[in-house]
Length: 286
Image (cartoon, rainbow, N blue to C red; front, side):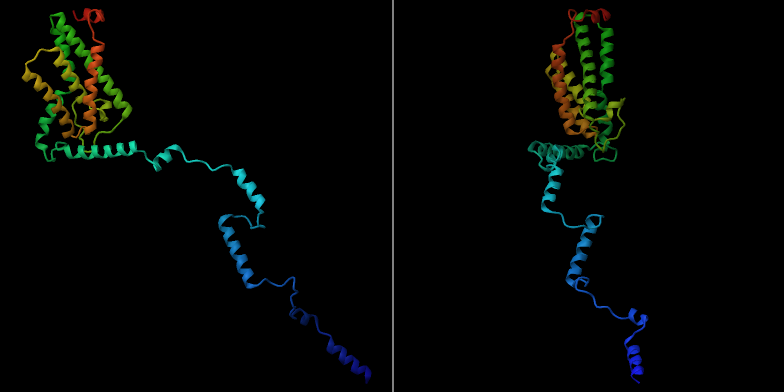
């Protein structure tokens, strides 16, 4: 009887292995999960690091290691000089930009003969006649014809220097246009008389330089009556204004061209050709 009681008690104390697998195990204090606040903080740190770096987040860096890393990067690089100029434009830069804006606005307003449909489109044929009067080809052809028909040494000297002035004007204007490369106004029609490659640029106005140069040359070396001298001066300003009205040039192109042509005559006077300085040329035209 005692033996049967002991067997029954032993069987009741023993549990099968399958029951032990389903038995809940109480976590130990070391392996207990973190609190909700710690899990949220850890999750936020992982998300922040994943946005800044693809690496797996590690332990936080020490302050000394951060200082060493910042020292290895070197001093902060300064902005380029051109960027500094854009951020802090000078007074001269602002003045030039304002002058350019006024120049473009005034040139467009004064281009009243730029096309047949413009406000003064009916006067466009007359403006084109004035354009031809300041072109280089008629002046070169007329000077060469005068040299061939000249009979006196004094007239040949004047005409030869006029030819030298016209060639000098062509060379200097082409050089400046090639350096500046300022495009002609947008409202211009490229229907000009006898153009070359550099004529697609507008600064300075070749017609204005030539008109000012020829005007000063004529006034110094030809004996003319006062009305004719006034007409020559008026012709210079009419040629300059017609360039803007036709839309060929901006206002500053014409103003600079007039000043450049005026100074070119001083160069012609300085390098004046005479039978003493250039005897070979005078022998060819004698």
